[in-house]
Length: 164
Length: 380
Image (cartoon, rainbow over all chains, first blue to last red; front, side, top):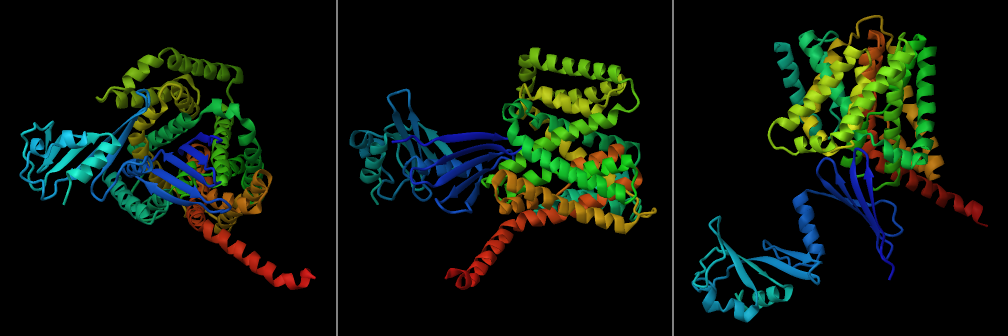
């Protein structure tokens, strides 16, 4: 497979441009402009006018998360971090809103670690964060949990624990 | 001082309107100055304070230009910059200079008008390329390099105009000395400079301001043009941490430059023996000449007249550098002419840049229709 060439170019006064052509001949170009925005252009093969989208850095990071294949659901977000030096270790951090079935139960009762392998590392309750909740921690209505684990463990967590 | 506050307040309102309509603010600032000043209501007068602030605006504009000037990259691939740059220079400066001379300006005045006529507004062009989402067009890169070439020509023009009647040898010796000093500081003091810029107290901003101001006043003391020296300072400091310097100098540039535009407008006198016919011709030519140069560049670089059209629509606007030339070297008559040219071209230019895609599409579909109509005759 021919590695696609990623060209980067510094345009005086404008910012930095990254451009690459896909195997199918479409072109994608990203510009980090000096004004702080990020513009993404896509040009379909054989087409003359590209289409463009302008994003803020936060929006661009979201798009990045989607593109790297992390699980994204409405209002619930996840970030995947790849540590390429550690045998390509990929760790996903995901936020979940606690469903009614879980309210009133402790982490121990739910057997989260044993059933899924994932770990609840923080819970957000009324805009306050509880870091590293103990096994005796009781979930309440409106809690949002931050769960860390490998992508598969997160999927298991979603299936086993987040039952509606 | 009251007049100063009126000017500032009017500018804020105008800036809001121009941002809302997403058209460049520069022509509005000048117009505001014209309306408030000598030529209009006469509420705002330029005095020593406003003069000082305008000067700061000019100096910070040029300092910024120096920061953006990355000579090593141009030297690395000069052909890119040269071909289009030389076409633009000869066509636009040629037309501007000859037209001004034929219209009755003196040789010197014609040179200033020609230069102001040639130099497009980097600020307007770059902002409109970003806002109109044209960064991916292949013409964009050509336009950006065109701007870089123009910056270099501006430096040469400033150098030429500022030599005056001095002893050339001594003049260049002084410049070389100052340049050597600035580059030596940025080279040997690089780590120290970066450590200052990294602080999060008031020191980085204070340092940037002091560096620019002391360079300007020191060059006055030495008798060398402060305009050139501030650009050189920017270029020298760009070898350390240009982004940090830009960040710290930006507030000064933003505020002072607006005042520079307004008070340029204030000093304009449209009531003198102005010939509006001449001004109209210069404005028209300023738009047409960019069409000629744009077409020539499009055809030589991209092999396409359509590219030429795109380059034209994006390079019509004249702005900050034309005004800088008018302020530094223009007579009142030249100043008024350049002011009118900047106002007209920047407004026309911003609309042309916005609707160029429509125009291109229109031309393409029109020629397609024509081709369809003609096919029966040419077909068999």
